[in-house]
Amino acid sequence: MSSYIRKAHHGGSWYESNPEELYDTLSTYLKDAKEDPASANKFKSSPNPNISTSRPRGIISPHAGLAHSGSTAAYAYLGLDEFLKSSNSNSPSSDTTITVVVLHPSHHVYLDGCAISGASTIETPLCDLLVDESLRSELLTSSSTGIFTTFTTMDQTTDEREHSGEMQFPYIAKMFMDCNRKPGKMKVLPIMVGALSTDKEKIFGKILSSYLARNEIFTIVSSDFCHWGKRFNYAPTVPPGEMKAPSTISEIYEYIEWMDRLGMDEITSQEPGAFAKYIRLFKNTICGRHPIGVYLSALKENATAGKEEVDIMFVKYAQSSQVRSNHDSSVSYASAVIRRI
Image (cartoon, rainbow, N blue to C red; front, side, top):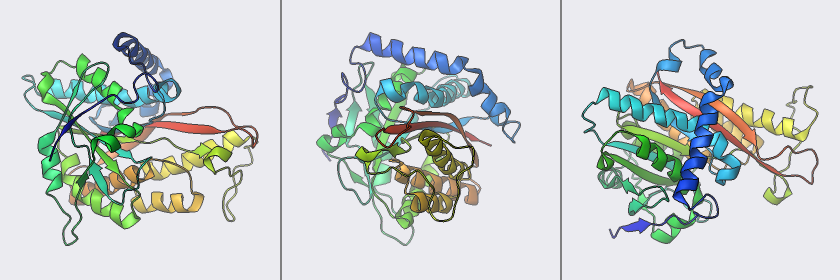
């Protein structure tokens, strides 16, 4: 396979191309998220009393332009920051290679499977990210038991056009820069998840499960939530069937949040089938629904096998604007932190 250097294709438009400006922007978002009392109180309200001190294992993070969703994403990335710091304290020599796996959707090409980035290096304005070529090789030679399902690789054009993976790279780069670990011991592996059936989500989740359970691997699931408005061809104001929205809802943006949070509840339940049923029922335009479905399937596989159990907690929700009429539009953003229990 011929590898390539993935360029920061969306730098200068979706996020700053100037390294100092980008670093300062990310630092401000992270500082604001860390100092937000509501963020800390989320974990204090968890039914698991130890969840606030347990080790982060992954996050769900939005992928719109940094000016739109970067402040929301910061709440999730505090989880990666904590993971890296805990990895350093657990391994004083910092000899263990940390790999951040990024599961992201495809917005530009049809894909009925999962494709791994073929890059050897990913450029960002802050620093270059090394791709975990060893893990990529493992996945390319893997298959599910009894069903031949393999990963493919992205070509450079497909890789660089897709923004949903790239929008995670600036934050990852900053975290790596700030981490006291040897540069060659921190890597990434982006995986594009296509328009999979529920059965295929389970298959790919099963393949990925043992890898994602490794202590040195951290998972990022890239997804925005509801895309509401005529330009998205999706503008419901009442729930489907005989379901009724709460009587306290009077504005469209309130309905959107209620609908999004129903989906978020299904994600936190860690039941892939329940989330898939929710998507079929509401047809909510959650663009990362397939990466989420694959990840939930992997988590369930690991829990069933006794390899790892986790808690998923959403720590921030926001909308690009408040929809009050059918002429408006908005995109929803949500951040979650996944911790081992």
